[in-house]
Length: 475
Image 1 (cartoon, rainbow, N blue to C red):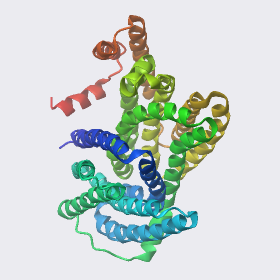
Image 2: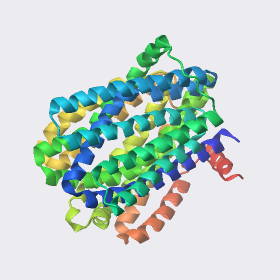
Image 3: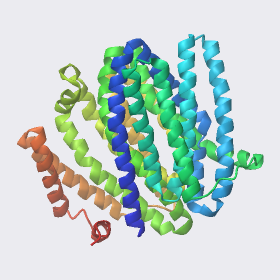
């Protein structure tokens, strides 16, 4: 199977699994919120947030580092996997002890402590599973990663139905999550043994030291990224109150639907770029150019459409009381466009041993975001937080583009022309849809036709794009 078809197949598997997980996750969150009530639901979300932060110290960027190196040197799988598994188990144990100490010092009640520790066990299973998923990505076998994701989300949903039916309480919510992650981990390990390699566990401490040292830039980047995506809500809560957080968060939940596409892209393309770095610098540059082009081509009409219909979409999903979220959505949606481009740039830089540059850029962005939020939230509340997020996304785009242009993977000037053509197509699409003032459901098919015609008229698709499309559909 050609690389193009293989990439398309893997993308399709991951996209399907992410859609299923998103739907299942929405259902069980709504059910649990109603079943648990405000207090217990708050404990659950606190536990999930705290363990999400602690997961950084379980992983330390080891998963990304392993994925990148195995994409280049698959013959080293036994060495990497054999050491990474006990290393992450050791880090999980240390993190468990540290979390227990934090809970003890903070004087949380017994129920909260139990729930946090149970969710930390779940997080440890998930993080180990992420290592196995990274190996599947390196070997272009994302189908098994997709099945693992579906197994996890399906078991949590089934567990949610059962615990509500039998009225089992908050502890069994955590146990439902653990059952999903544990069985998914077992499945992933079995497939790892069957399809790739039988791990032979090693305690090579010099290799551990080297792995942690080389993984740290990835880990620090994850810390900065986590802060970047959580700090606006926290600051908004302190500076403007819960109403502003509700307005802002509801729009953000819509945005997360589209960030799923970014997640799928990263899972598929990062290991591919890592392989190209070793095998073909020209293919690495071309894969970056095409990634940027296709991601902009896909996301631009969505951003324009949601800018026009933001209030309708928000009230359709959340109700009229969230009408003000429409103003937030029409701003935040443009950050997704930057997120897509930044995702392609991050994959290029990480795959070509420039992860330190990525870390520095994300550190600058994180600091900038905090400063902007302090200023803009004070004056503009949730609108200010939205603007701060988009400005920060644009800053990351500029900084990463500067690094890439100065390096040996500088894109061809044709990419600029392609972006201009796509932008003109988007402008044509947006102006016609805006002036036509169509019903939202009618605007979707009409807009698709208009955008495709505009892409054709501006000749946004070149001969290479058409050849890729023909290969995907088998003609």
